[in-house]
Length: 89
Picture 1: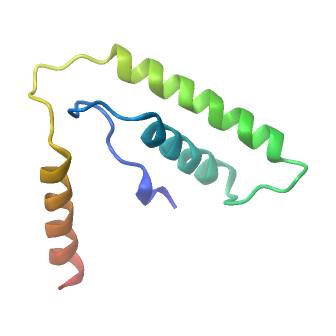
Picture 2: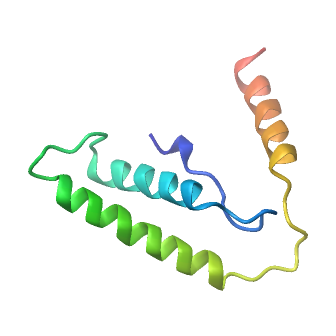
């Protein structure tokens, strides 16, 4: 379930709202142990996702680095290489 959470810091262009939202949903799913909350838990689930989105946004805005920004395409190629080495082609 957590494999979809990706590094969001130090990319050019910066992480989009969709990327932050997707990471927050994955985190809340993992912590709650539920991919689809029941109707009784939907409000708590949504509230938690919004809290994680806000915390993530605050964190990303506050982080500083001297490293050059990462390129999404280069990082994706590295991930494909790691996957090929791990699982074969």
